[in-house]
Image (cartoon, rainbow, N blue to C red):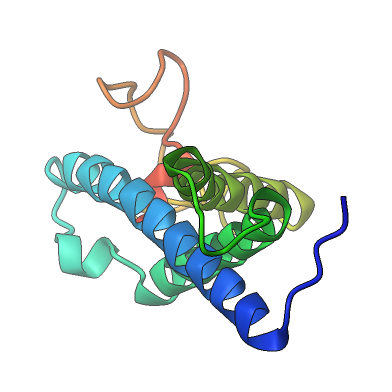
Length: 149
């Protein structure tokens, strides 16, 4: 079924999706901040040194885009939005940004760090991989949530 809306309604729909997608990404960032705090607690690096504000902002923008795209396909009537649709847009921001960042890290890996470990700015590229801890699976390094974004 094709939906025909006026420009103002489209902007409201896209704005709602963007806000909810960014909020979903912000929730993911909270998890990343906790993991980053755990990672830097055993080093001389401080949280303020490890957080990359540009990466955080980029992640929020990606979450907003994912939420906007989800809103176009999920919502037919902007005046009657169900809670399940709101949860779906939050989820789109959370998982959409994770998917896009994961894809981009494999499509264009950083030269300085091994794939999958570019998220944590702790230590040097020549250092041994971090030991597994409670926030990562055995034998696995840090996850993309450690990027604080």
